[in-house]
Length: 379
Image (tube, rainbow, N blue to C red; front, side):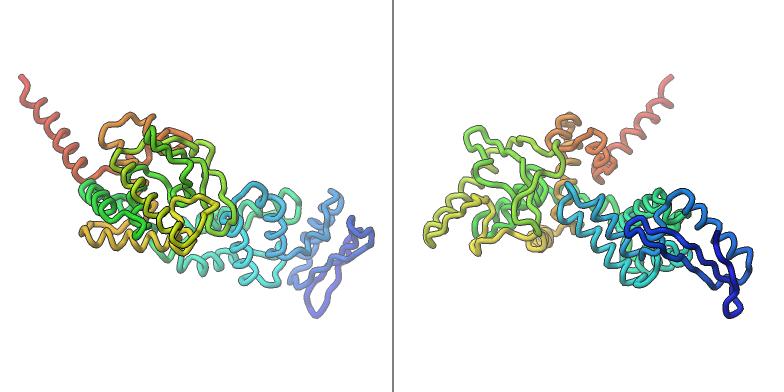
């Protein structure tokens, strides 16, 4: 039974238990209770855990330590290093904000205060992602009997930065066409980023897929590109594509094929002049024998968009969104577009078409107007 006594005007309990790891007896003590009944209730919960064979030694675990243990146990295997790094960043943030706090002592108010601070420089989407990580850990801790309440439940996420609007993730058709033209005109081994941008406009490939592209995956005889690898900045070796459905064969235009042929010749001549053999056989291996980083290609994209006077500044990944939406807007079969994009499900493709280009929206509105105008004119 728990021992309850008063110390310095506050109530304190002590529960003796056997540590299943070491086999030694230890005491679980907590004080500071104003009322004896509160102390008795807290001690009763510990005694219940003890009778249910809960490992009481884990009750002493720090918030940050338990999160790391949970990540190492459940969130490492089979995940990319970039995803794992997000979990470890979350651990770092927890450690900075709850340096010496036990998991059982974290209150909902403390957690809300932490999330308010954390969200000041982040978007709502980012907040939701990290909230999800911590919530999953809390659920596991409750199942282990370490804590009894979910302090992440109903937390209000307040973001300090606005998320990018859906409409800002697409170029309008005229800007998209102009981007295709300008990136094609500037393509060549002297401007690798422009060539990557041009290939993205023509195929809708992801940055990771284009960067990982090797010459053996381009079939110059039947004008196709085989997509089956992805590049990760912090990985030494190439990884699998985002999902199994992302493995696909893309047909490219004759113009795109000519650009790649000329580009390949320029690259081969340069490598020969310096006596370099690229064992990786990368299409977009630079003169510095590196691969192009996402910041570099995004900076080049910004320059091209400025050059054509684009109405929006989009990211490299947004070219993919525009490409998919442009195909759908052109009347192509949604199932074909879904396979072309490498989406697992058709609904993923269709969500891009929730965006209507301004010109299309105007045409649709006029058609709607005509429908009802004609109804009233009929006799």
